[in-house]
Image (cartoon, rainbow, N blue to C red; front, side, top):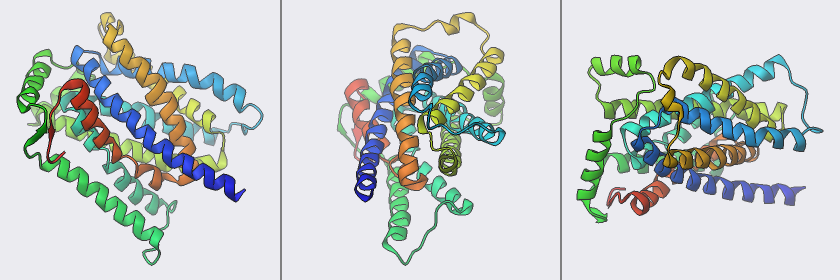
Amino acid sequence: MAESMGGDTWKAHVSMALAQLFYGGYTVITKVALNVGVNHLVFCFYRNFLAFFILAPLAFFIERRTRPPITKKLLMSFFFLGLTGIFGNQLLFLIGLSYTNPTYAAAAQPAIPVFTFLLTVMMGIERVNLLRYEGLAKVGGTLICVSGAMLMVLYRGPALIGDKEMDHVLQIKRGARGQPEPSGWLISGLLNLGFDHFQLGVMSLIANCCCMTAFLAIQAPLLKKYPANLSVTAYSFFFGVVLTLIVSLFMVNESTNWILKQSEILAVVYAGSITSALNYGLLIWSNKILGPTLVALYYPLQPGFSVILSQIFLGTPIYLGR
């Protein structure tokens, strides 16, 4: 049993590192789709529907004998998982990404371990003993993660790889194409208060991190009561799909927004199959083994992967600070 748990722990650590690599690819591929002009809500709906279409049959057949019965309390927990980790998390990330860039969007993600660490300690899910190496590692690792992310954001430095003029050209192209507004009245209202698009993007990314923090914190105790990992993931996406569809019916006015271009279809397939179905499955399984704080500590890998992939596929220069 001990060897099995040790093997699972090792696999969970590798899974979380791979998940961040896949997330890094998601920021780059999705940024291309956003530049084309895909509607945020439409993108989220297609992504989540594809993920649910993949996960629901797997959960039904694989866990049909081990899945505990559903109660109203469990359904409420699944609803909040869908609201925070699927609907809110994904939509806010897309808004933030559309108004910033893949590197900045990924650099905001190390806030997740900080928020998760604080929330889980307050909820009593995590316990910190600063007299033990484990407690010192959690606190020290969290501080290092945040310091690295702040360095990336606040200090750019000279371009080491790539032409910095290319970065300026990409910004002009993004500004010329414009971005579809997921909820025009809200964006317009915030712009009227004096915020610019970049600040709205940063605010959306911070809110995105808060949603992911709530998702991880709610999930950890739930998995002890309902240990069917795939079913938890499938139920979360079910409520995510329902919420996205309801909001889309009110917010998406043009029927042409539901028709995807080739690059948008590629982004939806990658997001639905890899970033949603596979990554969320790995995340929930690893959360059961490692706990929310250790799972969240892998998010600082995302900026590094995003920087490298952005340079390769988008031509974004790599600066000394990044």
